Length: 168
Image (cartoon, rainbow, N blue to C red; front, side):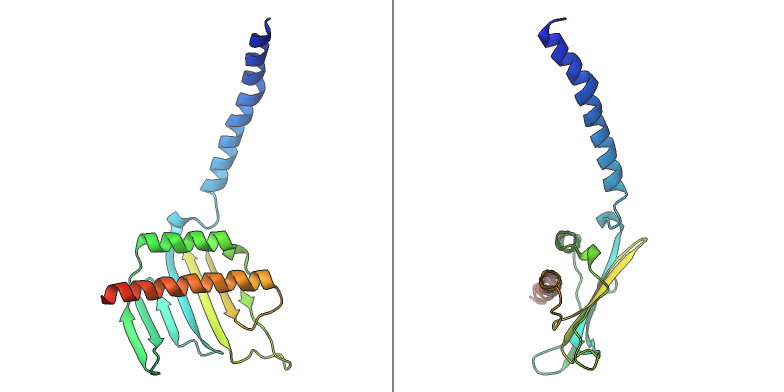
């Protein structure tokens, strides 16, 4: 057998099965991913001082209420588009939202939570739901703190941008 024939035989016997196995393995991994955008149902976002989460957004109903700069409660409808949800889903995946603990809360000396800004964020899918409660005074893990702040900022900015776009 010539050298060229040996190389072709080696490629067929070793490399081809390896590539087929990789395609098979990763296609199953992607298909069974725990949080897939195809299964995305809704997003809930609440924020406020301490336990008072007065500002709320629910993507299922489009209901958004917030306290404006004049301390009056404003109620409006904000409908996010599919592209907006896809961006927020990908941002959550990029920042590792699925691995965040449920509570990212800083505590005071007496063990109670401080009267600082708190954020509640929930991504709801067909079979699973992931939610977090984030306190801006959390200081234990700086990387987790930065990732949570970034995700909260992205969600808040997206909602406010869509609200401003709809009002024009």
